Image 1: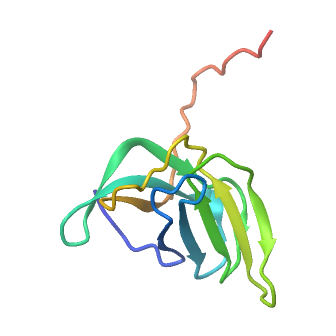
Image 2: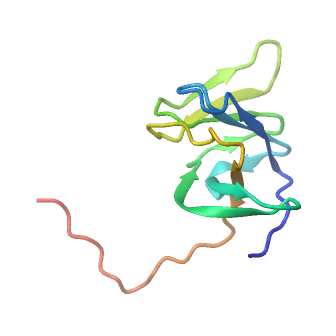
Image 3: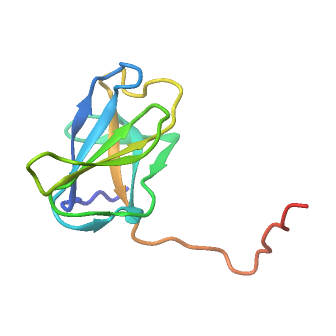
Length: 133
């Protein structure tokens, strides 16, 4: 797998490891970005800065924008997304929820991996599902 640096959005860390409803991944925007191009997957920490992704553990951030300096808190528990104005600052705090029933990062070997989606292929010629009846 080719790994490149993602400089426009940075993982600051995982906080409150293993604590239900508190565990979160904290990210900060280094420039204005479209969140729709990013997501998180869970990986296992390897040697010398390597990591290996785990299957079936992906979170797409969804559509939205972060401005330079804005914060993104990704809580691993279920919840409602919200935006908070930070006191005496122009930056905002965006909170989103992964929706998991249990914490994800209770073991320090499990880490969040930030991904940027530069291309997606949508198959042509495959019929759409019929509308519900």
